[in-house]
Length: 317
Image (cartoon, rainbow, N blue to C red; front, side, top):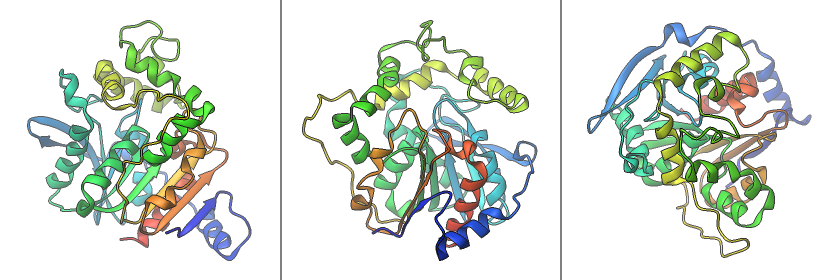
């Protein structure tokens, strides 16, 4: 079921005017870095760090690569007056545990970390929000834990069926995914593993331009395990399929309200992967595309994402 397909900026329609009015309203500027409450959820001995603000229905946010909980700072600030917002560090990142076993980074363990965070806060369900690898975890959490998923919000990661289809048939997506195959085959110590450069805190934080924010990212990556980051790719990213082979359709049909954002300038995940998503969601589905934003859409178009997210969540409390 398709509720709405939105391209920001919107065309001039009644819906577009209403959303444009919402987007024109001022947003807060508080820095959640200073006000977030920090804690750890225990997942069978694995400690998962989180930062939390606000009170209300639980929202759990999951970052991607290379990132940490602070990537959600704009959205946390926007939601904190109406929701309890909990942004996690995935295992291997920042203050979360960094188990040495490669198997510890298999998707079921990443999913169970999210479940542990929800249980830690005394809840049985939450809105699950994920970007990039956090989006992969969020998709799989919703598939495997439908009763714990109030709503699903995905940023710049197509549905698994759409992604594997493009990886099988789309030459651009296959080329865009070359870096992931390098991560799968390489080691964190290789001098050229990270887009021709070494994995260093400074290089990993290269996409952050604001000096004060960049310093916080560098500090977080200094605490992180680069081996752990790559293990998530090694254990979960699909091998490059043969071109034009049969496309598996393995994901179950979702039955929870779903919101997707996609920055159309993403150089890693082609927007063609969004096609037919509506065939795999048997619930309200809203797709928002933002032409001027790239892969890190929650930062590139922070105000648009934050206000649209709040508007949508207020209607799905």
